Amino acid sequence: MRLHPELVVLGYSQAAMFLRRADSPPLAALITIHGQREHALTADGVPHILDLAFDDCEAPNPRDLIQAARLRLRQRENAETGLRLCPPTPEHARAIVDFAESIQNIEGLVLCQCEGGISRSPAAALLCLAAWTGPGMEEYCVEHLLAIRPCALPHPDLVAFGDELLHREGQLAEALRRFCP
Image 1 (tube, rainbow, N blue to C red):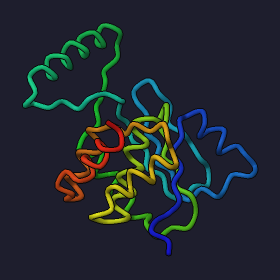
Image 2: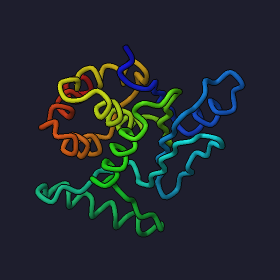
Image 3: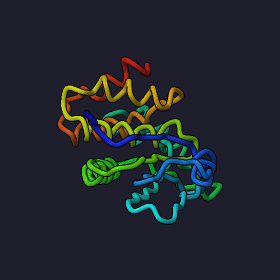
């Protein structure tokens, strides 16, 4: 019994090489995530594409004064070089969950890609898995993600936003903390 579409999680260069291989399996969907100074992956002929723009940085927590101060300092330093980091938001998580639900029954491979394939795209893949498998499957989702991308360290803020949207009451974020302390 198939629980969900097949996933692959890669960084930008790996994904570009994957798409150019003659023996690559057919790609049915793509989630590409890029920041201000990164490029989005393009894939001709892929029927379902979600293109998100946000950086691999912490989302501000208004209740954490120390984190807020660190974030303001980083933003001030980045402004001097013309870089304005955009952290993930609940709207980004909503876009991923909505996209996952819309492609749940597709045939073919779903590629999740960000610059390094370590933080943002694994978090997107984890949200897809959680949306596809339902409540109570949080540990399976994290284990499956780590089986397909052992170096993954999913972005904790994006996972927390998705956890809330999917009404998991912290179970997805907790499963992630257990497997990726």
